[in-house]
Image (cartoon, rainbow, N blue to C red; front, side, top):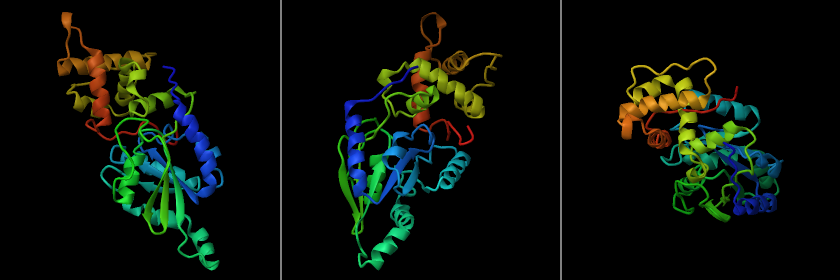
Length: 291
């Protein structure tokens, strides 16, 4: 699956970030806790070089808790401040302003010594499409300031959002990159809905996701689809082939049959993706720092 998705507004966003970076004190990068590496735009390091960084691991309520601990430690070891968040439910968002001020403690002290106590701190908020950026900003602000929808590419222009007298956020449109060199990155983004479903083959996507869950979280798959046991993976069998057999077994249990008694695996793939994204199967993380 050669996933490429780079609408024109993302080129404009990249240019806007480069122009505005001099106007902010720090950068807050919002990542999906289920795919912290895949949801990082590699361009961001270059575009924001030299600025203090706060990493927000969002959707921790949907991610594997043990894996989230590993990712938080990983980013702290790189020198970033880390905040764990469930923006939709509000977890972690109340700690944001304090986390920013702690990150910028030295700079704020220097301002105070120069008689600039109370100077407004400005933070640029970055994140790929559909990572929960607008929801996070609305929770931090305590009001609806950014448009939110459960689909990528909704925020299309920058806007300054005042949080309190001393803190302003620069909301930016989600930005992806032109081509995913590593297929697993493109798949992870597709699993979580960061790229639009209508550019993908849903059945193939479902096979890949089922193969991953079957390998890493077999008990969750077995329980969710009431399977006595999972079909064993054969030697040399690739993800699509094994995933297809898992999809078939799950679809059969759900009664998704078509003419001739065949299983409607495309319907089962759509259901799998919906249930995964809706956290109906459990809490999963699709990549780990050690990988």
